Length: 145
Image (cartoon, rainbow, N blue to C red; front, side, top):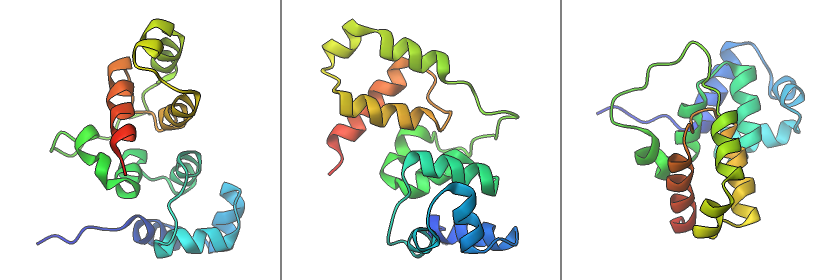
């Protein structure tokens, strides 16, 4: 049986492979070294913007990091087959603008400013391409404990 890797373990292994200390990684992503230690030990989960910065610095797949940090979302973004890594992350700017500018859709689903802020951060991951996907994620956010 394959053992699942934790977010902290993956980040630590990659950091070490790149020859970075916790302090150097922390400086590159704009946090304290103690916060890196908390994330690597599993005592903290990084915010979405921090996860984006860590993925960039450590050259890791954003989707994989997101699923490790939020395993409850795996079914929402994973069709069962491992995704092929795109040459460049897909642009979600258009999808995000279309979603946030659709006032009737936002009103129909009673999307709050707090939810919009969370969805905007999630759009930084680069994998949400339609308003429908934003709504599916919104549903997940609303039902999460």
